[in-house]
Length: 253
Image (tube, rainbow, N blue to C red; front, side, top):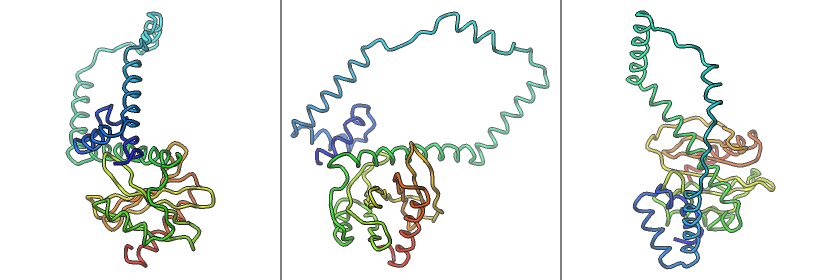
């Protein structure tokens, strides 16, 4: 594990968000790296100072009285309204049984992962974090990924189509290591994150706006893709369309 990789995971280590495997990797690195050990110590000191500081705010009693006065007065429930409540509970139970609640949970999970993707994109823009392997040759980037990931991302050179391949790196999303292929559009960086997905079915691409960045996400060939950049949504759609078209032409390079 390099210092750049360890720095990404230090906060997650402090907050107890890493699995046992990543905890061992980070702790083994810290044991032999004075720089990262000092960084971890500084983070822990900061965490202790924040925990010890009295940062709670107690609302005055007048605020409570004003809120209570503004609330509608409670009414005695009639037998009919009680029965209506039971009926509504049955509807919610039926929704859960048919998987509607699961869909809501999946939506929340997707939003969390998209936030992690944007955070990883922002980290990559820091000096020295963008690429682990710098190359405009897809036949250099893909073998580098093959040796470090269970599933290497497809690496496609789109330079002739207006999106320059500049390299790749190892990143962490949703607590696991995944590949990131890096492209450039004029002065703008596009990070394409690729991870294996248990759902091998293809899903159409869609674009979301998260924290001011555009994310284009889709599934194909048993892989999940997230392309994130500050270029316009139309240009990011153009990128994903050209990438998918090239994948079909090249047979999942």
